[in-house]
Length: 166
Image 1 (cartoon, helix red, strand yellow):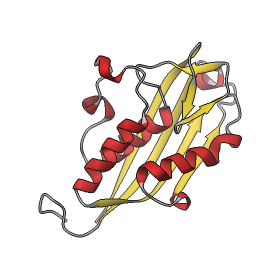
Image 2 (cartoon, rainbow, N blue to C red):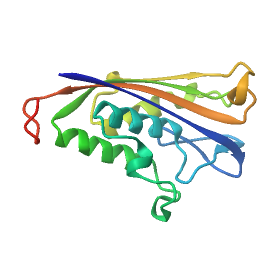
Image 3 (cartoon, rainbow, N blue to C red):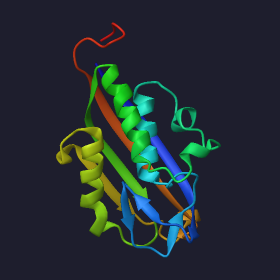
Image 4 (cartoon, rainbow, N blue to C red):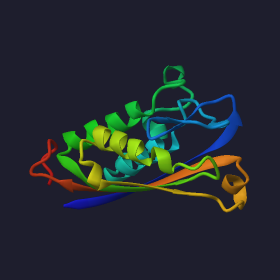
């Protein structure tokens, strides 16, 4: 059985915060504002995986009003979702993502993001796609007020799951 999940995340950009994408610190004057490290790529990937499993969203599992998640590395959230996936007998087939950010250019960081995603998802880098787009000076992304990520993930059941379902 195959399942598909979709995740999206958006954060305001502010001065004085680091910009972290896919677990990679990006050299930038503006960073994403959020309770955790505000890594929109990993947040969207977590939501996509939770969605494929029909287990809600990142906020249900990691509420942003809980102090223990303040400044947390978002890889924690995705690793948790991977654990839920494995408990249910699924593996990731592939992940496709798009990051919308006016600047800086992300091309120099894409391979490191792909590597980090592959490691956390326990898959090969060739199963991971990370694309970067600008906002063409339109809307909050184009005006450098926000960053957005969208992720689609496909998972496949491998044999019998722990809850007796395929």
